[in-house]
Image (cartoon, rainbow, N blue to C red; front, top):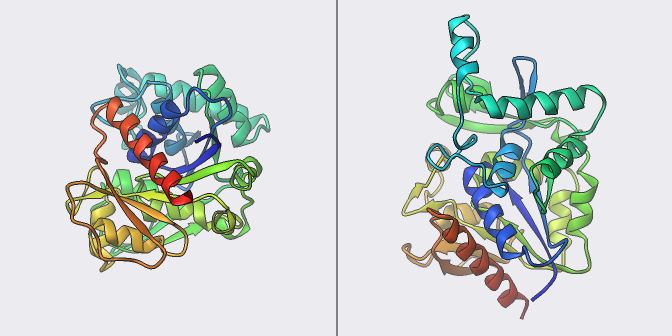
Length: 315
């Protein structure tokens, strides 16, 4: 089945499936828009850092570090070593080639370019065909209420290694942010085939996107099916703190626990084939597939399974 696909994503798992979708749809021009979380963005060492946008770009360009899961493959670290020697802020790791991307982004933003325009420039330089779109050109910043008080997301995630117990999340600036126009237009396309919520952390990767005014409503009003993919397999998150967050918020640490976050928004939910079928949820069709993406082939296989599920929901 032909038509445009929109993916919502952030984090390593989201970037992997976004890559799989780009491969699955590569033969068709203008077939994929990827709306990326920017709630993780922050200023560091005078630079504008966009971790999720970079993770998606690196995945689609074939540049991701296959071991760490973040950053670029074959990276060198002379900048960080020198910074540590100088007594600088070295808690957030910036590889040498990764640093060049942040410098280019920061310089262009300082010249007045939008984050969308900068991202398009970087994607063109990296020969990425899919359209990668920030959820908004306005700043939205995720903050985490922990047992130790409110923290900016990167302080919680990197500096404190997700150790403080989570109580609540806030998306500062979301209420007044404008959705990225191309992202909103993609969700309203008459040829929309599917909307895919990637296996990203629901709290800090997907819900910041949904908090931008207009995006949730556009998804709910779309004529295409909405299919989400579990980030939880066997009661554990493959990468990141999603399972820990579910536990600390008193929620079920399972695929079903994540699916409940999306009730009223999704039509289908993909659970891992190793997990038992969840109890029924209103308006949600559960689909079983191999969701662990250990290889590039796994990404492509899962992307095709998700698109088949969406096409079935249409039929």
